Length: 380
Ligand code: OSB
Ligand code: MG
Image 1: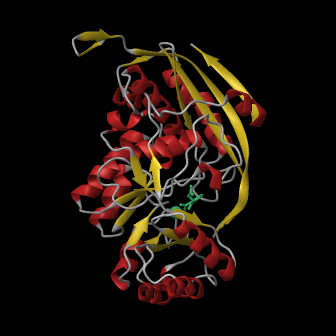
Image 2 (image 1 turned 60 degrees about the vertical axis):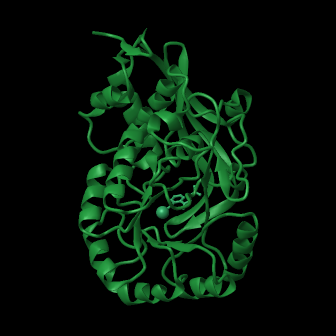
């Protein structure tokens, strides 16, 4: 049987009849440095998926080079072009579960598959005339957010912390790396005794650094994010036995199976969910639900996304176990001008959820054109 009954009306399935894949380049307002390197611009694939006269949007969160995880912009666009888009174009799907089934033959590449899966959620929500948050199972009109501050001199970091607390951000995350850790955290904690502080090492340490990491226990951090290897679970479980600060995993969680193993082995007492690195919203929801079953709080991470990825993150953050502030802060902190019409700006550390069907933001087509470096179209 084709078509589904909703409110008594029979809905046509969504037939994907085309797609557009762009490579977009946005300069960053300020360079962003983490343990693995410095970014001065955001280069990302932007996907438009078309079905039943509707358009759905998503962006890929992979970097040009495999320095955060192992996917790359070139690899992901090649895979979208050669395998993922051909798996769905010309086909009909009732809902995101059906679409996900078409992608099952393909292994790994959770960022590339998320790009496609998320664009379909946007179309599906629009076809139901509902905001994305509602079909994901969330609710509320705004979400709590903090900021992630890149590596920088201590004096400068103290000023940036003060500025962002002043703006109402609910948590400050400091990037750390060997040689730029204890003194920084000590100085920030001394200046801001009651702030919610966290650190993110982006895999810069090993178990040999356990004693140094244990010294961070003195600074009452909400958690330490991804201290050890990007593809490790075991050593994080060992480290958690040696330190009191809760470990939060980011890079290590790319699927619900990763989350299950981390939760069962006590390798993560907090999880940073990034929908764009987890294969899409279905997996993000599964990771969210599994974490709740283990009484482990989650929060929504970011990858310096444009307004498209940012809007997806905000909608996802409305689910109930997103009980810690996310990284989806004001777009103007990253970009002079964004590719969406709506302004995604926080008010007192709260990010409003874009209203309207789907992700609730529209492309600023003229500006998008000016920052597009390549463009290809696909048809059924
Ligand atoms: O580890 O969370 C991370 C940015 C790029 C790559 C990895 C990370 C980050 C951030 C910033 O911490 C998140 C954001 O502000 O979007
Ligand atoms: Mg991180």
